[in-house]
Length: 579
Image (cartoon, rainbow, N blue to C red; front, side, top):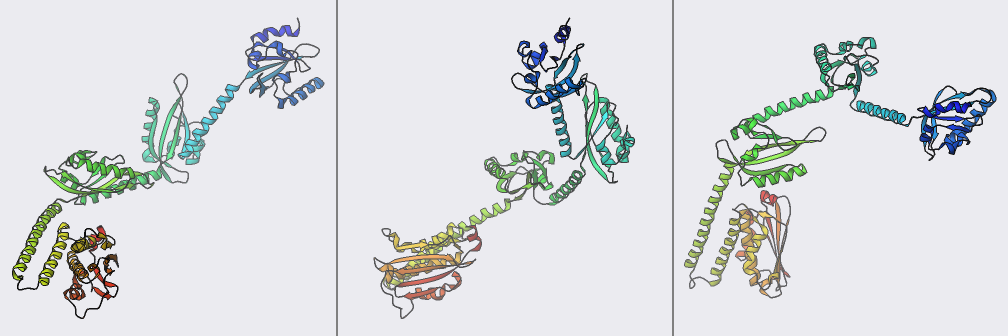
């Protein structure tokens, strides 16, 4: 029986692929498993150089030299060894294999048997394991943790380089439960007891204790350990991580102190104060809030505060709150809140966003002020102002009636009666403007339009133009401005630009300082202006009579091309700022 015939039982039963090669490097036989692994049928490869069939191109030269060395010296570097190298499939795919080579046969040139095992899955598993270990160690490093392992009984065994680096203990010192010597005396026994319970119950271990670092400094650590299980469910070992949380503990302590100080100050505040979470629910209310609502603190947490708002005010409050939360900006609102006595109180609420040291939004801090007394005072003020307006209006009407009866047509020149009535009407028009503003202030433009209305032809509105920013003056300045513009308008109708069809008047005003402005009256297109020989009532009024009310001395200029007047104005600071 030939050597090849003797090999057939081996070729047909071997688990690994078997390739038979002669001394010339040609394939002498090919097992069924080889056909499956490489994709070549036996008839396709027998008699062909093995290097051309399964050896990658970059390894063929080494293969040739090794074969020549064996033929010449009968020695080989690979016989009887297990090698890991690459092989080639019929489709050109290169893959990792494990190879062992032995010789076969008696006398003459021997045959070489190559037992080949595909280790692709093994390589993949090793790569996945390495990647997993790398990720695990990266995770440990990311949390600045110290990795350690214990056996199934919870004892520290083997080398623990992380623990040794942290504590300075030698393997002999930390072995078993020796690691407890590096734990703070107050924490050591509680740690061991909790650890043994976790080991007995085979559940994750979570704990915190103080560890003495190798430099003698005590640090706070958080511990987490979990069991790793074998296929039968038994514990193989415990894997744990010590994470240094000293700075976190310090920050938490400072935060608790800060919150405690805030709560003391908040409880001392006379107005309701609250804090919300990032989600919006109330987390804290002060004593004033409790007293106002007439409820316990716990009953005011969450979104209960919404139930205290008057039903008519809820939509507006929630809309304003939602708008502010979308941009994380401060907001305020006025609404009626039901007190513990059952009555509704007007409250002005202000809330601003809070952020932690990292800039993360953590909620809103708010305070409310009771506006009920102010609201009631405003209502009373409006009633008094309305009554005052009514009485002043009646007084002006009475004055006009007295003037008509006193200055009778046959006894008083017509122009005197007419001028007096017009001046009273100018004051009445300014009074109407102030009445609409509750006698707080009036807009310069509105006062000017009311004052010159008698001189404007509805068919030619462009003859009197106005231009200037939104400015406001106080009551006395508004009345004085109305009288001044009335006198200028009357003069323009009688002698100036408005006495002819082509004449125009331009009224302009601008700010001259934080609290002052100037209004200019300029006539053009009218008759040539001559300086009057004597001053009439209007000129005397403009020259000095209105100085204290306007806030400065007006200037009247009789320019040949047209009359000009410059009227200084004292602005109403608060109202002008609001406008």
